[in-house]
Image (cartoon, rainbow, N blue to C red; front, top):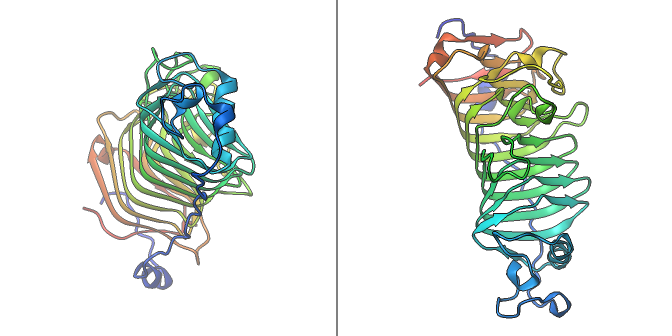
Length: 333
């Protein structure tokens, strides 16, 4: 593989043979016996169905009724969101012990999980049209999450802003995460969107993010930027990146100012004791600067890419590695 350096030390080879153990994500405790009578709007729907409490898909949403649903959820009642569009943002601030079931439902705004939120479960298939932002929260489970662009249905009429797992977050799990057409235009709306998926947070980096399958398609800027400790991605597929603008961008934590403008397919930086089992980087363009960037880390806590593939024009892009990187690439397929 041209211009690619394999960083191999004895301890890395030894550790690469070990199966990485991930910390169990704590789940909410369910309570189906809760009395929901004071919140009922339409008793024809079963307990836990959002419509029972006045929140319907494809209709204007009362924030008061949405708050009532969150109150029930906090007491342990799983809340079901039937198929359709919900034209709202969903903000969970210091919220714990909540379980949602999404029956191919779409949130037309953003989901924000903030500051002390814990033991949250998002079952079923959920589509989000703006962004997912997580900060200082832990023990969060997603089943199937799709972040996509629809400038007609998005409540801001903009492209999506991807996923940001920020400082102080720990034990976040996705069975399937797909992010496509993340914006990167030179306007303030995308100022903090330097990558479609960014896992970062200087001096308090995220820990134990697990993704079974990750797909990132057509990212306006960098596709994947990852820092932190103990992460595991079983399979990641990157298709096209760096296709929009580096103007009017804020930086990325743990990166030097200006580096965020060097768009990259996958950028691993200060990432310790992490594993990506299978990684494919594809591009139909050469707008990005690097296909892969391997930055520094703690040498005795190595990170592994077990299998890697470069397709299409991604092979023509530079691979950049830091002399202090702790990343071992084992096999190209």
